[in-house]
Length: 105
Image 1 (cartoon, rainbow, N blue to C red):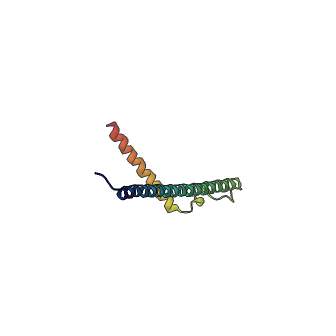
Image 2 (image 1 turned 135 degrees about the vertical axis):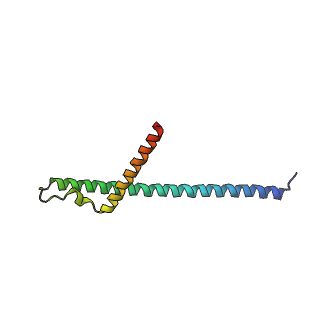
């Protein structure tokens, strides 16, 4: 089948437009991924900074006279959150024990 010049040009134009859109979409996705990674990195840096500050506070607390020191439990701002984390760890340990028992059977 022979196509006339106009039809051939339209096909090539559609292919080029499709390719350009694909490149644009890929570029937008890459930009979004890079922005997300940058945000993730900033958050991780903030967490590290907060961890270092907390460690410094705990060290300073240990250097105080005993009657001025805070107990370790007083650093626990949200006891319910800590309890939830402990329950999750216990559940994960139980699940791991079950898996190991199943694997060794």
